[in-house]
Image (cartoon, rainbow, N blue to C red; front, side, top):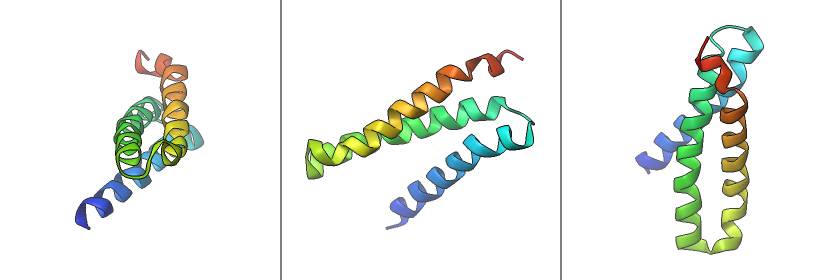
Length: 81
């Protein structure tokens, strides 16, 4: 159970990392790193979902993965500032 709690805390911190830098207009490069971190977690979620519950259960984590990749790609310009 400790691992599931750890993953939940990581997802919560990643979500805050996506929202707060843009909201406060400070250190917006953190949005890119949060999106990359969440994408890595979602890769694991897709794999575990497919292995345990089948492909239909992996649709939601796959959509979140795609969205995280789009955010990281779209905000990549903030890494060079």
